[in-house]
Image (cartoon, rainbow, N blue to C red; front, side, top):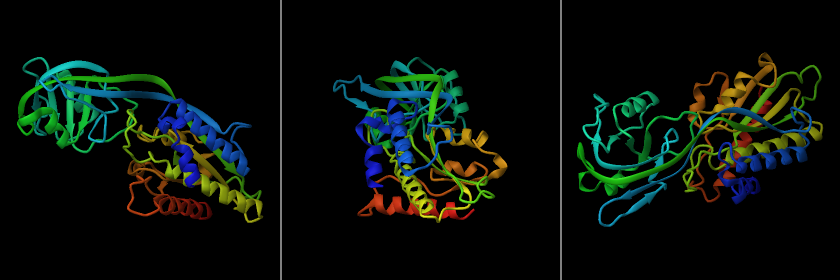
Length: 345
């Protein structure tokens, strides 16, 4: 699993972001491993599969102070662009902090930014944009990702400590001066490709092999587009590595004559940072009769809990674990969970 994790995070994988050549490289690697283990592709000769959907690519952000020191800040663990942001180049003169009771207030002058103490919903962000604001600063813990939605406003996640540096002495005020220039590069693709990898281990008994257990993991990452080490659920790739190990073990058991009576489908999905878009598309149109699928087990974020019929195995956790060997501890636990789920229909 350590070898898998090293390969999935190699430089040529480019962070495994959705709809990139780096993710395609990672998918090729997984497919080669499945072929080596003896798993069968769903379609002859091809382990990789494409589905299509919109993706908003946020490529980076720069905020530059227009004061005498002209300090600049880019995407890092304290500040990231919201994945729904539109591309923008603008100069701001002031900010206004909006309250939860009356969140939308028309801007009184040009160049005013809205400041929120929470991440806005799609509808609220649109309303703030329609009120005349071009930039929203959402204060809190920054969260990286990508989105299937593009909003007509720029949204920046900022940690409070960074906001204090950007806005100066008026950081805690309801409004105040904000002489900064904001640049966000974003690109909306209405038909981006979601790349998945699938391999099947047929059941050992003809009367049972039409029954299926699905074991799945996120392959892509919603990592910070600037390449900063912000590990979100799915970002480290440890669930994908654990699923590869589970596939190897189950295939080896099948070769030794102790295979499972039912079939097992292993699936590495993309779209984990787009509200689990790949998993949702798979559940909507699986390559198997729905009434013959006994279980779908997915190691991913809490957001899969609202998907009917999905059992969440556990989160893909950042490797900043206090454990002396987090790959062994987290990866083996996930792999064991996959193995147990495959055997318990």
